[in-house]
Length: 139
Image 1 (spheres, helix red, strand yellow):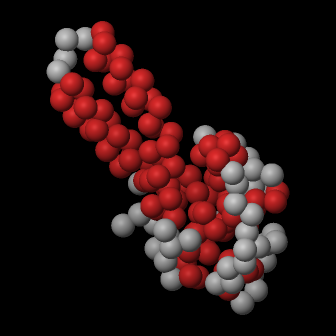
Image 2: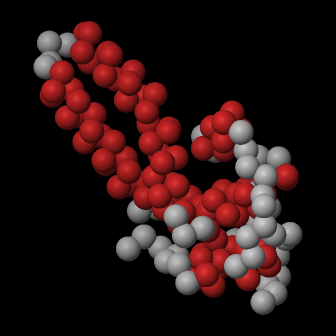
């Protein structure tokens, strides 16, 4: 099946999975924090936002963003307040769970923004996931 769109788009819709360039750790962190990857990684971005495990990947990316903040908050709260460690950990886990929930409920839109940032037309992620038979939205 051929669909209009940039390079890599037709292969993704047809289920063709070529070897794609994967970003290294530094580039991946930049990508997670909203940066644009070089054009060599466009097919990987499409794969990242449309593969069958795209929501799991999004959850891991949210965790990677939250982890430094959670660690900093843990040290600040345990060193500067008389709160027991168990209360601090419980509060931080609740913050992480709320962050995950709020972000994953909008994961579709965030994926589309990432794809648009890398030159794909609007709706690419939803269309590719639908063509592959995956869920295009959060349950």
